[in-house]
Length: 219
Length: 216
Image 1: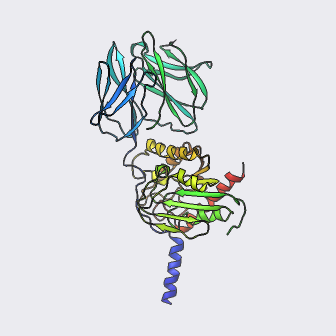
Image 2: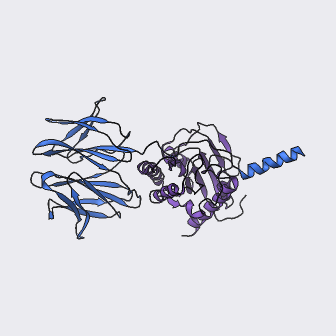
Protein backbone atom coordinates (compact mmCIF):
# COMPACT_ATOMS: atom_id res chain seq x y z
CA UNK A 1 0.00 0.00 0.00
CA UNK A 2 2.78 2.38 1.02
CA UNK A 3 4.74 1.45 -2.12
CA UNK A 4 1.68 2.16 -4.23
CA UNK A 5 1.20 5.50 -2.48
CA UNK A 6 4.85 6.46 -2.89
CA UNK A 7 4.84 5.30 -6.51
CA UNK A 8 1.69 7.28 -7.15
CA UNK A 9 3.13 10.38 -5.53
CA UNK A 10 6.31 10.07 -7.59
CA UNK A 11 4.30 9.81 -10.78
CA UNK A 12 2.18 12.78 -9.74
CA UNK A 13 5.09 15.01 -8.83
CA UNK A 14 7.23 14.11 -11.83
CA UNK A 15 4.29 14.79 -14.12
CA UNK A 16 3.12 18.02 -12.57
CA UNK A 17 6.44 19.57 -11.52
CA UNK A 18 9.55 19.95 -13.60
CA UNK A 19 12.87 19.63 -11.82
CA UNK A 20 14.12 22.70 -9.97
CA UNK A 21 16.58 24.75 -11.98
CA UNK A 22 19.75 26.37 -10.77
CA UNK A 23 19.67 30.12 -10.25
CA UNK A 24 21.67 31.74 -13.03
CA UNK A 25 22.06 35.39 -14.12
CA UNK A 26 19.35 36.67 -16.44
CA UNK A 27 21.58 39.42 -17.76
CA UNK A 28 24.81 41.27 -16.99
CA UNK A 29 25.38 43.26 -13.80
CA UNK A 30 25.22 46.38 -15.99
CA UNK A 31 24.57 47.20 -19.63
CA UNK A 32 27.33 47.12 -22.27
CA UNK A 33 29.39 50.23 -23.00
CA UNK A 34 31.30 51.08 -26.14
CA UNK A 35 33.92 53.61 -27.23
CA UNK A 36 35.42 54.61 -30.59
CA UNK A 37 38.00 57.16 -31.65
CA UNK A 38 37.58 59.58 -34.53
CA UNK A 39 40.02 61.72 -36.51
CA UNK A 40 38.33 65.02 -37.32
CA UNK A 41 41.35 66.91 -38.69
CA UNK A 42 43.09 67.12 -42.06
CA UNK A 43 46.03 64.80 -41.32
CA UNK A 44 46.51 61.17 -40.27
CA UNK A 45 46.54 60.34 -36.54
CA UNK A 46 47.39 57.40 -34.32
CA UNK A 47 45.43 56.39 -31.25
CA UNK A 48 47.87 55.12 -28.64
CA UNK A 49 46.49 53.15 -25.70
CA UNK A 50 47.88 54.03 -22.26
CA UNK A 51 49.81 51.15 -20.69
CA UNK A 52 50.10 48.79 -23.64
CA UNK A 53 51.11 51.57 -26.09
CA UNK A 54 49.27 49.65 -28.82
CA UNK A 55 48.41 51.85 -31.81
CA UNK A 56 45.57 52.20 -34.27
CA UNK A 57 46.02 54.46 -37.29
CA UNK A 58 43.22 56.77 -38.43
CA UNK A 59 43.49 58.29 -41.90
CA UNK A 60 41.46 61.20 -43.20
CA UNK A 61 39.55 58.84 -45.51
CA UNK A 62 38.77 56.26 -42.80
CA UNK A 63 38.51 58.53 -39.78
CA UNK A 64 36.75 56.29 -37.21
CA UNK A 65 37.72 53.11 -35.39
CA UNK A 66 35.16 50.41 -34.71
CA UNK A 67 33.30 50.60 -31.42
CA UNK A 68 35.19 48.70 -28.72
CA UNK A 69 33.24 47.04 -25.89
CA UNK A 70 34.62 48.36 -22.59
CA UNK A 71 33.86 48.19 -18.89
CA UNK A 72 31.33 50.83 -17.88
CA UNK A 73 32.34 53.72 -15.63
CA UNK A 74 36.06 52.86 -15.79
CA UNK A 75 38.49 55.44 -17.07
CA UNK A 76 39.78 54.91 -20.62
CA UNK A 77 43.16 56.52 -21.20
CA UNK A 78 45.25 57.04 -24.30
CA UNK A 79 46.50 59.69 -26.73
CA UNK A 80 45.86 61.12 -30.15
CA UNK A 81 49.32 61.36 -31.72
CA UNK A 82 50.40 62.75 -35.12
CA UNK A 83 52.85 65.42 -36.25
CA UNK A 84 52.93 68.06 -33.53
CA UNK A 85 49.75 66.72 -31.95
CA UNK A 86 49.97 64.87 -28.65
CA UNK A 87 46.55 65.02 -27.02
CA UNK A 88 45.69 62.93 -23.95
CA UNK A 89 42.41 61.02 -23.98
CA UNK A 90 40.57 60.35 -20.73
CA UNK A 91 36.91 59.42 -20.50
CA UNK A 92 34.40 57.21 -18.73
CA UNK A 93 31.43 55.63 -20.47
CA UNK A 94 28.13 54.91 -18.76
CA UNK A 95 26.29 51.57 -19.06
CA UNK A 96 24.38 51.41 -22.36
CA UNK A 97 26.32 54.33 -23.82
CA UNK A 98 28.20 54.55 -27.14
CA UNK A 99 30.87 57.25 -26.76
CA UNK A 100 33.02 58.76 -29.52
CA UNK A 101 36.27 60.53 -28.61
CA UNK A 102 36.91 62.91 -31.50
CA UNK A 103 39.88 65.17 -32.23
CA UNK A 104 39.00 68.37 -34.12
CA UNK A 105 40.78 71.68 -34.66
CA UNK A 106 39.50 75.06 -33.50
CA UNK A 107 41.49 78.13 -34.60
CA UNK A 108 44.15 75.68 -35.78
CA UNK A 109 44.53 74.19 -32.29
CA UNK A 110 43.58 70.57 -31.46
CA UNK A 111 40.51 70.08 -29.28
CA UNK A 112 38.81 66.92 -28.09
CA UNK A 113 35.07 66.45 -28.27
CA UNK A 114 33.18 63.55 -26.69
CA UNK A 115 29.84 62.71 -28.30
CA UNK A 116 27.67 60.26 -26.36
CA UNK A 117 24.68 58.27 -27.60
CA UNK A 118 22.38 55.99 -25.61
CA UNK A 119 20.45 54.31 -28.40
CA UNK A 120 16.83 53.27 -28.04
CA UNK A 121 16.31 52.57 -31.74
CA UNK A 122 17.89 49.10 -32.18
CA UNK A 123 16.06 47.52 -35.13
CA UNK A 124 17.42 44.90 -37.50
CA UNK A 125 14.73 45.74 -40.06
CA UNK A 126 15.86 49.36 -40.43
CA UNK A 127 19.09 51.22 -41.12
CA UNK A 128 20.13 53.89 -38.62
CA UNK A 129 22.03 57.06 -39.58
CA UNK A 130 23.38 59.71 -37.18
CA UNK A 131 24.75 63.16 -37.94
CA UNK A 132 27.53 64.38 -35.64
CA UNK A 133 27.98 68.15 -35.95
CA UNK A 134 31.70 68.79 -35.37
CA UNK A 135 32.09 71.67 -37.82
CA UNK A 136 32.79 74.28 -35.13
CA UNK A 137 32.37 77.88 -36.33
CA UNK A 138 31.24 76.80 -39.79
CA UNK A 139 27.96 75.24 -38.63
CA UNK A 140 25.89 76.17 -35.58
CA UNK A 141 22.89 74.05 -36.53
CA UNK A 142 23.41 71.17 -38.96
CA UNK A 143 20.87 69.20 -40.99
CA UNK A 144 21.11 66.48 -43.62
CA UNK A 145 18.76 66.79 -46.57
CA UNK A 146 18.14 63.80 -48.82
CA UNK A 147 19.30 64.69 -52.33
CA UNK A 148 16.43 64.72 -54.81
CA UNK A 149 13.75 64.18 -52.17
CA UNK A 150 13.41 67.62 -50.61
CA UNK A 151 13.21 66.19 -47.08
CA UNK A 152 15.58 66.25 -44.14
CA UNK A 153 16.99 63.00 -42.82
CA UNK A 154 17.99 64.70 -39.55
CA UNK A 155 17.80 68.36 -38.65
CA UNK A 156 18.94 71.05 -36.23
CA UNK A 157 21.91 69.24 -34.76
CA UNK A 158 23.71 71.57 -32.37
CA UNK A 159 27.49 71.88 -32.32
CA UNK A 160 29.22 68.83 -30.79
CA UNK A 161 25.90 66.98 -30.57
CA UNK A 162 24.33 64.16 -32.59
CA UNK A 163 20.90 63.24 -33.85
CA UNK A 164 20.06 59.76 -35.13
CA UNK A 165 17.25 58.56 -37.38
CA UNK A 166 16.02 55.10 -38.42
CA UNK A 167 15.06 54.65 -42.03
CA UNK A 168 14.29 51.96 -44.55
CA UNK A 169 17.41 50.42 -46.10
CA UNK A 170 17.65 52.40 -49.35
CA UNK A 171 20.30 54.02 -51.54
CA UNK A 172 20.54 57.73 -50.76
CA UNK A 173 22.82 60.75 -51.04
CA UNK A 174 22.74 63.54 -48.49
CA UNK A 175 23.55 67.24 -48.50
CA UNK A 176 24.84 69.06 -45.43
CA UNK A 177 22.78 72.13 -44.57
CA UNK A 178 24.29 74.57 -42.06
CA UNK A 179 22.16 77.31 -40.58
CA UNK A 180 19.78 77.00 -43.52
CA UNK A 181 22.44 76.99 -46.29
CA UNK A 182 23.61 73.99 -48.30
CA UNK A 183 27.39 73.73 -47.92
CA UNK A 184 29.98 71.43 -49.47
CA UNK A 185 29.36 68.58 -51.89
CA UNK A 186 26.62 65.92 -51.55
CA UNK A 187 27.73 62.59 -50.05
CA UNK A 188 26.52 59.22 -51.30
CA UNK A 189 25.71 56.85 -48.42
CA UNK A 190 25.33 53.99 -50.92
CA UNK A 191 23.00 51.08 -50.24
CA UNK A 192 22.17 51.31 -46.55
CA UNK A 193 21.61 47.88 -45.05
CA UNK A 194 18.95 46.78 -42.60
CA UNK A 195 20.28 46.27 -39.10
CA UNK A 196 23.37 48.40 -39.69
CA UNK A 197 24.16 51.68 -37.97
CA UNK A 198 26.05 54.53 -39.61
CA UNK A 199 27.42 57.98 -38.79
CA UNK A 200 27.86 61.05 -40.97
CA UNK A 201 30.49 63.34 -39.43
CA UNK A 202 30.43 67.03 -40.35
CA UNK A 203 33.97 68.35 -39.77
CA UNK A 204 35.27 71.89 -40.29
CA UNK A 205 37.08 72.28 -43.64
CA UNK A 206 39.46 74.85 -45.13
CA UNK A 207 36.58 77.05 -46.31
CA UNK A 208 33.41 75.08 -45.62
CA UNK A 209 32.39 71.92 -43.71
CA UNK A 210 33.28 68.48 -45.04
CA UNK A 211 31.32 65.27 -44.50
CA UNK A 212 32.76 61.86 -43.74
CA UNK A 213 30.82 58.60 -43.49
CA UNK A 214 31.42 55.55 -41.29
CA UNK A 215 29.65 52.31 -40.45
CA UNK A 216 29.27 51.90 -36.69
CA UNK A 217 30.79 48.44 -36.47
CA UNK A 218 31.38 46.61 -33.20
CA UNK A 219 34.91 45.31 -32.81
CA UNK B 1 6.46 8.26 -33.86
CA UNK B 2 4.97 10.67 -36.36
CA UNK B 3 1.25 11.31 -36.08
CA UNK B 4 1.23 13.82 -38.92
CA UNK B 5 3.28 14.47 -42.02
CA UNK B 6 3.09 18.28 -41.97
CA UNK B 7 6.84 18.55 -41.38
CA UNK B 8 7.83 15.29 -43.09
CA UNK B 9 11.22 15.40 -44.76
CA UNK B 10 12.29 18.47 -42.77
CA UNK B 11 15.23 18.39 -40.40
CA UNK B 12 15.10 20.72 -37.41
CA UNK B 13 17.87 21.83 -35.07
CA UNK B 14 16.66 23.38 -31.81
CA UNK B 15 19.07 25.28 -29.56
CA UNK B 16 18.34 27.18 -26.41
CA UNK B 17 18.74 27.88 -22.73
CA UNK B 18 17.43 26.19 -19.57
CA UNK B 19 13.99 25.78 -21.12
CA UNK B 20 15.63 23.06 -23.22
CA UNK B 21 18.30 21.88 -20.79
CA UNK B 22 16.13 19.50 -18.77
CA UNK B 23 14.42 16.30 -19.93
CA UNK B 24 11.08 17.57 -18.52
CA UNK B 25 11.19 20.91 -20.32
CA UNK B 26 10.89 21.76 -24.04
CA UNK B 27 13.50 19.06 -24.62
CA UNK B 28 10.54 16.74 -24.09
CA UNK B 29 7.43 18.65 -25.16
CA UNK B 30 8.65 20.75 -28.11
CA UNK B 31 11.01 18.05 -29.35
CA UNK B 32 8.24 15.43 -29.29
CA UNK B 33 5.66 17.74 -30.83
CA UNK B 34 7.94 18.58 -33.79
CA UNK B 35 8.92 14.90 -34.09
CA UNK B 36 5.22 13.97 -34.20
CA UNK B 37 4.85 16.12 -37.33
CA UNK B 38 7.26 13.86 -39.19
CA UNK B 39 10.42 15.99 -38.88
CA UNK B 40 13.87 14.85 -37.85
CA UNK B 41 14.79 16.72 -34.68
CA UNK B 42 17.99 17.45 -32.77
CA UNK B 43 17.53 19.55 -29.62
CA UNK B 44 20.34 21.00 -27.50
CA UNK B 45 19.82 23.05 -24.35
CA UNK B 46 22.49 24.75 -22.25
CA UNK B 47 21.28 26.18 -18.95
CA UNK B 48 22.00 29.89 -18.56
CA UNK B 49 23.25 30.27 -22.14
CA UNK B 50 22.91 33.58 -24.00
CA UNK B 51 22.91 34.17 -27.78
CA UNK B 52 26.59 35.13 -27.81
CA UNK B 53 27.44 31.75 -26.27
CA UNK B 54 25.83 30.08 -29.29
CA UNK B 55 27.45 32.53 -31.72
CA UNK B 56 30.97 31.85 -30.52
CA UNK B 57 30.73 28.68 -28.42
CA UNK B 58 31.13 28.84 -24.63
CA UNK B 59 31.31 26.60 -21.57
CA UNK B 60 28.15 26.13 -19.53
CA UNK B 61 27.55 26.90 -15.88
CA UNK B 62 24.46 24.95 -14.82
CA UNK B 63 23.89 21.93 -17.07
CA UNK B 64 23.28 20.76 -20.61
CA UNK B 65 20.92 18.22 -22.18
CA UNK B 66 20.46 16.95 -25.71
CA UNK B 67 18.11 14.68 -27.69
CA UNK B 68 18.17 13.29 -31.19
CA UNK B 69 14.91 12.10 -32.76
CA UNK B 70 13.19 9.51 -30.57
CA UNK B 71 16.30 8.78 -28.51
CA UNK B 72 16.47 9.39 -24.79
CA UNK B 73 17.85 12.63 -23.42
CA UNK B 74 21.58 12.80 -22.81
CA UNK B 75 22.21 14.93 -19.74
CA UNK B 76 25.74 16.36 -19.44
CA UNK B 77 27.73 17.97 -16.65
CA UNK B 78 27.44 21.52 -15.36
CA UNK B 79 30.33 22.88 -17.44
CA UNK B 80 29.29 21.30 -20.76
CA UNK B 81 28.47 24.24 -22.98
CA UNK B 82 27.27 25.58 -26.31
CA UNK B 83 28.90 24.73 -29.63
CA UNK B 84 29.26 27.63 -32.07
CA UNK B 85 26.14 27.71 -34.24
CA UNK B 86 28.01 27.82 -37.56
CA UNK B 87 29.83 24.63 -36.62
CA UNK B 88 26.51 22.97 -35.76
CA UNK B 89 24.84 24.15 -38.95
CA UNK B 90 27.74 23.15 -41.18
CA UNK B 91 27.82 19.70 -39.60
CA UNK B 92 24.08 18.99 -39.51
CA UNK B 93 22.74 21.11 -42.39
CA UNK B 94 19.19 21.30 -41.00
CA UNK B 95 16.35 22.83 -43.02
CA UNK B 96 15.29 24.92 -40.02
CA UNK B 97 17.00 26.13 -36.88
CA UNK B 98 14.82 27.10 -33.92
CA UNK B 99 16.45 29.36 -31.32
CA UNK B 100 14.83 29.44 -27.87
CA UNK B 101 16.46 32.45 -26.21
CA UNK B 102 15.02 35.25 -24.13
CA UNK B 103 14.83 34.79 -20.39
CA UNK B 104 18.62 34.74 -19.91
CA UNK B 105 18.67 38.34 -21.19
CA UNK B 106 15.76 39.77 -19.19
CA UNK B 107 17.83 41.13 -16.27
CA UNK B 108 14.65 40.69 -14.25
CA UNK B 109 16.41 41.56 -11.01
CA UNK B 110 17.82 44.82 -12.40
CA UNK B 111 16.03 48.17 -12.60
CA UNK B 112 16.31 48.46 -16.39
CA UNK B 113 16.66 46.22 -19.44
CA UNK B 114 20.27 46.29 -20.74
CA UNK B 115 19.25 47.14 -24.31
CA UNK B 116 22.71 47.69 -25.75
CA UNK B 117 23.85 44.32 -24.37
CA UNK B 118 20.73 42.53 -25.61
CA UNK B 119 21.18 44.08 -29.06
CA UNK B 120 24.84 43.01 -29.11
CA UNK B 121 23.89 39.47 -28.08
CA UNK B 122 20.97 39.02 -30.46
CA UNK B 123 22.42 40.70 -33.53
CA UNK B 124 25.64 38.70 -33.21
CA UNK B 125 23.84 35.34 -33.22
CA UNK B 126 21.24 36.21 -35.86
CA UNK B 127 23.98 37.47 -38.20
CA UNK B 128 25.98 34.28 -37.69
CA UNK B 129 22.94 32.19 -38.59
CA UNK B 130 22.15 34.53 -41.50
CA UNK B 131 25.50 33.86 -43.14
CA UNK B 132 24.50 30.18 -43.53
CA UNK B 133 21.15 30.98 -45.22
CA UNK B 134 19.41 28.49 -42.91
CA UNK B 135 15.74 29.24 -42.23
CA UNK B 136 15.61 30.44 -38.67
CA UNK B 137 12.79 30.87 -36.18
CA UNK B 138 13.54 32.66 -32.91
CA UNK B 139 11.22 31.70 -30.05
CA UNK B 140 10.95 34.56 -27.57
CA UNK B 141 10.25 34.30 -23.85
CA UNK B 142 6.86 33.29 -22.47
CA UNK B 143 4.98 35.19 -19.74
CA UNK B 144 5.83 32.82 -16.89
CA UNK B 145 4.56 34.15 -13.57
CA UNK B 146 5.68 37.27 -11.73
CA UNK B 147 8.25 37.02 -8.95
CA UNK B 148 10.06 33.82 -8.02
CA UNK B 149 13.79 33.51 -7.61
CA UNK B 150 14.47 35.16 -10.98
CA UNK B 151 12.16 38.10 -10.09
CA UNK B 152 10.44 37.96 -13.47
CA UNK B 153 7.86 40.65 -14.26
CA UNK B 154 5.29 40.85 -17.05
CA UNK B 155 6.35 44.41 -17.87
CA UNK B 156 10.01 43.45 -18.33
CA UNK B 157 9.33 40.31 -20.35
CA UNK B 158 7.08 42.34 -22.64
CA UNK B 159 9.80 45.00 -23.04
CA UNK B 160 12.35 42.27 -23.81
CA UNK B 161 10.06 40.53 -26.29
CA UNK B 162 9.39 43.81 -28.14
CA UNK B 163 13.14 44.41 -28.43
CA UNK B 164 13.75 40.87 -29.69
CA UNK B 165 10.91 41.12 -32.23
CA UNK B 166 12.70 43.95 -34.05
CA UNK B 167 16.22 42.58 -33.75
CA UNK B 168 16.29 38.86 -34.58
CA UNK B 169 16.12 39.32 -38.36
CA UNK B 170 17.05 37.44 -40.56
CA UNK B 171 15.40 35.02 -38.13
CA UNK B 172 11.59 35.18 -37.93
CA UNK B 173 10.32 36.06 -34.48
CA UNK B 174 7.85 33.72 -32.79
CA UNK B 175 6.26 35.77 -30.02
CA UNK B 176 5.52 33.39 -27.15
CA UNK B 177 3.59 36.15 -25.35
CA UNK B 178 0.89 35.76 -27.98
CA UNK B 179 0.53 32.05 -27.24
CA UNK B 180 -1.03 32.43 -23.78
CA UNK B 181 -2.34 34.95 -21.28
CA UNK B 182 0.02 36.16 -18.52
CA UNK B 183 0.29 33.54 -15.80
CA UNK B 184 -1.84 31.01 -17.66
CA UNK B 185 0.87 28.36 -17.56
CA UNK B 186 2.00 27.38 -14.06
CA UNK B 187 5.66 27.76 -13.17
CA UNK B 188 7.93 26.34 -10.48
CA UNK B 189 9.96 29.53 -10.01
CA UNK B 190 8.36 32.27 -12.10
CA UNK B 191 10.46 31.39 -15.14
CA UNK B 192 10.46 27.60 -15.60
CA UNK B 193 7.14 25.87 -16.17
CA UNK B 194 5.69 22.75 -14.65
CA UNK B 195 5.64 19.77 -17.01
CA UNK B 196 2.02 20.54 -18.07
CA UNK B 197 3.11 24.16 -18.67
CA UNK B 198 5.96 23.02 -20.89
CA UNK B 199 3.53 20.74 -22.76
CA UNK B 200 1.27 23.72 -23.50
CA UNK B 201 4.20 25.94 -24.56
CA UNK B 202 5.77 23.19 -26.72
CA UNK B 203 2.46 22.45 -28.48
CA UNK B 204 1.77 26.15 -29.04
CA UNK B 205 5.26 26.74 -30.49
CA UNK B 206 4.83 23.74 -32.78
CA UNK B 207 1.45 24.98 -34.02
CA UNK B 208 2.92 28.41 -34.77
CA UNK B 209 5.93 26.89 -36.55
CA UNK B 210 3.71 24.70 -38.73
CA UNK B 211 1.83 27.85 -39.73
CA UNK B 212 5.10 29.67 -40.52
CA UNK B 213 6.52 26.75 -42.50
CA UNK B 214 3.44 25.59 -44.37
CA UNK B 215 1.39 28.79 -44.87
CA UNK B 216 3.26 31.21 -47.11
